[in-house]
Image 1 (cartoon, helix red, strand yellow):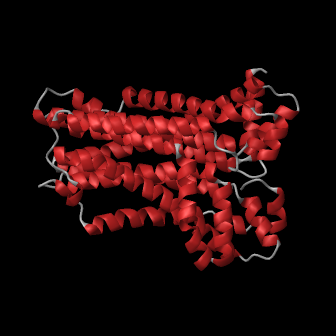
Image 2 (cartoon, rainbow, N blue to C red):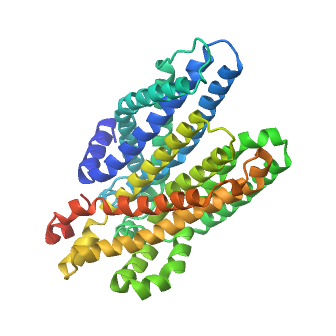
Image 3 (cartoon, rainbow, N blue to C red):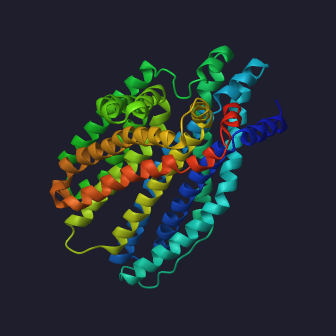
Length: 441
C-alpha cells in the first residue's frame, strides 16, 4: 500500500467518524497549548543572569514542562486508542476485503500524523497567549527576575511538535495493534458491543506491577531527604495515574458493583440500563476514568500545598488552575467522544418508545458510575501520595479545609455529567430511524 492509499483510507475514516477525529484533534491542541506555555516560560527564564528569582521561575517552568509532557503521553495515547477502537468495525471490514495488519497500522499512523500537524499551529497560538498571561501573573506577583523578557520562538514550537508527533504515533500504534491483529470475523462480532471486549490477564498483571512500583516509589520518597520530597511528588502522582490508566476497566466494574443496588432501587429502568451499559462498556470507560482521576488527584495535591502555605503564591495558584483546566478539558473531551459513539444505541431506545428524558436519566445514572470510579480513584491517589509525603514537605492532608474537598469532588462529578450530556441535544435532532443506521454524529 502506497502512502497515497494510506492517505485515502485515513481521509475516508475521518469522514466516516468525524467525532473521533475532532476528539483527537482537540486533545492534541490542549496538550500543545500547555507544552508551549511551559517551555516558553522555562526558556525565557534561562536567558537571564542567575539569581534566586531566576532559578525559581526556571525550575517552575521546567517542572511544569516535564509534567505536561508526561501527562500528554498517556492522555493523547488514550484518546487516540479510543478513537481507533471506535472504528473497530471499519477496520474489520478492511481486513475482510484483504487489508493486512500493517496497512491498518499505517492508516492510523497517517491519520495521527496529520492530526498532530493540524493541531500544532492552533496549540502554539493558544500556548503563546497562555504564556503571556502567565508572564503577566509573574510580573504582578513580583517574581520576575530583572531583565527577563518573554521569548516565544522555535524552542516551544519544536517542543510541541515533538510531543505531538511522538504521542500521536505511539497512541495510534497501541490503539491499532489490537484491531490490526484480530480476525475480521471476530472484530465484526466484537464491534457490535463497543467496549465489551474482555480485558486480558496480561493487562491485569501489568496493572499490579505498576501499582507495586508506585507504592515502592512512594516508600523510597518518604525515606529519602525531606528537601527532595516535594520534587518527587509529581513523579509519584504520575506513577499512580499510569496504574489507573491500565486498571481502568476494573475500576469501572468495581464502581458499577458499588452503586448497582442504589441505581436499581432509585433509578428504575434507567438505573437497570445504566448498570448493564456500564458493565458492557467497562473497557471504553477506562479512557474517561483516567483523565477524571488525573484532574482530581492533581487538584487535591496542589490545593493541599496552597492551603498549607503561609502566603498565597499567585504563580503556584495560576499553575494549579492551568493544569486543572487542562486535565478537566481532556476529561470532558473524552466523555463527549464516548457519548457521541452511542448514537445507534440511543436511537434504538427511542424507536421502541423511550423518551428523551428517559435517555438523559440513563446518561445521568451512568455518569454517577463514571464519576465514582474517576473521582474516587483520584482521591485515593492524592491520599496515597500526600499522606506519606505531605508531612515531610509541610503540607499534610489536614491542611485542606472541608469546603475545598467538597468543591473539588463536586466539580469532578458535575464535569462528568455535563460533558456526558452535552452531545445529547445534537443526537436527539437525528431521527431515531436514521440514527439506527449511522455509527456516530
